[in-house]
Length: 235
Length: 312
Image 1 (cartoon, rainbow over the protein chains, first blue to last red):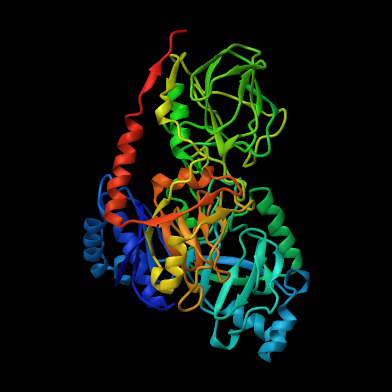
Image 2: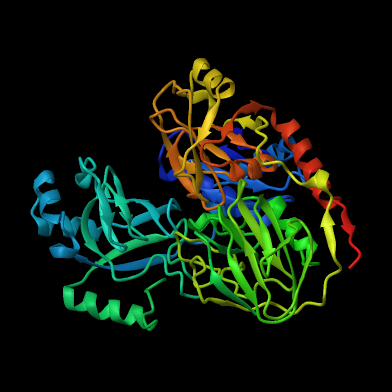
């Protein structure tokens, strides 16, 4: 465990050196415990793969005292400390114009497009954290068979909702942005909707599954999402 | 009610900022220069975090549709009421039909216009601050446009007061900005850290509310410029592969995968945000305990800024 200052208002707690479910689970458990104990002076927290950034008020608690308190809590931070994860289903229309890299990725992985979709949609993904752009999940969980180097030339514009793979990761673009992942398909759900009462769909720790849908169902769900009439499946 | 006759290049509604949303990838937003913003609110007797306007380089032209009090702070820019010069850092008493105009900044980049009662836009996720890239909060998630109408919250007339001249910053001065080294200072060579602390960096025009891009002596990495993505604090000095630093501000990305050599202290963030393109910046390192002592002193200082009463 390492404590690193991030200026006068924040510090980073590093709980490991790698990207793993175990380390990330402890990061999220530490965040959960901070909230549960209402740790004095803590303003907000940002989990990532292996670190928790803790924003605090130095008028209430100093760096050394906060490190000591966090060190104590981190000892107790394990999987058992947290409430059960949510399971979220993301409908996804694979291939065609919504998934322009499906055929190319399949060739690269020596699979048929259909096998690739079956493997991708058959897996369960863990949301390690949300970051970079509003609502964007950092996820892994795909079978090793789907590990693939990122695109040689990243796209300048990737449409929101695009579902991509790169390295061992899976990503759903939450807003239109540049991106270097292979785009397998698109979800009609909005991971970030600034007009909605709850703009963010996914949370750190969620378990995500993709459900393969066809184009007519994509269009139907997209229309219901736009009308505010679609209820995502969350268990 | 306020009518926007000319918004200027980028004027947004900002309050103290959105808390607790960084874990969902939503930055706090709010004023880049929180001190000037707070003083504008004090001058019109608002709570410190009440919603006000932040303009960029050139101020807006606004017509007030009912009597109100206002104040302009931040960047040094000419203020007029019905074309007659009016003081900045001072409570202004406006009548229905008055036109308040703020011209181009002579020094500094961001100015604040507060109205008694605050700008009444609906809070989103607990805040009225505008997050432009996310189209969230403020007025429909965007910068002001010509003919926008802003409603004000209820207010009683504020006494006329002014910020003492010695409490008004001179934005043309370029004192060294205080940083705490880390979180990833160990990913740079000694020469890289020496270049960062000894060099002079120029602010680039591509700077915005997300971050100030700087150009100067190259900062050399020790073991590559990528890290396992982690949280990005206010003031984080991110150094990508080209060795040129970016100081991340209020609309920053919540997490990122570049090394961060140091973090600019909160009390020097206004200086970063007020440095014009071409203006020079230097950095000096202090330890985290000294930073926190100065942080508490800065909070006490702004709490104690005396406003002078002005006879009307």
